[in-house]
Image (tube, rainbow over all chains, first blue to last red):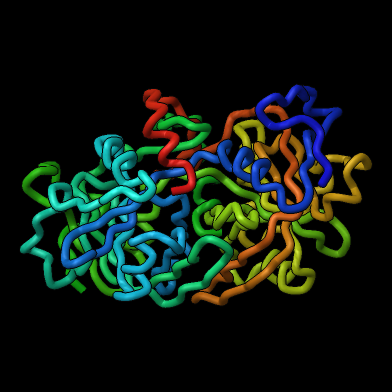
Length: 200
Length: 200
């Protein structure tokens, strides 16, 4: 383990001459600290627990590929959500909007009861196509069938086929990083670069 | 396949009364369109190709767990980067800052030559600890050893142990979503909720 100064007191500011602090080995604290810098959307994974909607905020949601439509989430293997997924092989990934900030906190409390009866869409119109709870006012909800569960350390990497997509009218994504909730503000427009970035 | 109106012309605006458009089955276009809504950081995966630094922008980077420090990336299986990773079992994930916007575009062009000799940190001081190319001015770089490669459709899900972390002085994360580059602006501070969110 090589360690200079902890990330919270980083004093290196000369980008050109100093690469930065370096941590090697399995430094869990350095990893957590480094991950705090990463900004991403906020995702609540919903399942049916004892027949009722249950939700857990996860740090890790990712698209995998578009052909066929596939996503993944990482869930702590000791959670109710993990056992629901292992049992039923189904879940929904709800990407949150700013309107759902309260849900992010509610569903992130370790060990708490996280029934979400009051927060789901009553959906008689698509009950045959969508099997898992859809959170109201989400950016998008992916209704998924698990294709693979890989145990990795304390977590499961859950890879899943997207079987239905619920797309509400456009809303503002909720972001989280650096210990804060955020929203995104456009930097600049550069269509050529942007086209290239999509699904590289 | 049940389809109402395409996402680009969504006319539903009443969140309370209408859940949104629903797409079912393997609708690749709907999936791509839905994924465009998701805002996240931008990651360039670097490898050594013919002994030189090579980089590819990926849509998918995620932490997996902190114990042990583990991340994953998803890479198109037909890319140079995928073959480098399969051959060497090593890569670095460089999370980009606003200062590196040009690199995001450069490394996202399909089929282009993506040698990055001029963009890496000259690092005699940590050459023994860090094996893969570290991009200058990154938010954070994770030097990784592959533990598992899962083929899924057109992509590989690459799960990897973090063996070194390079943490430069604090910089502004580059974000991408909705077809645009962005930066994050703080919404509000709510320490209790934020503590709960970390590693739920």
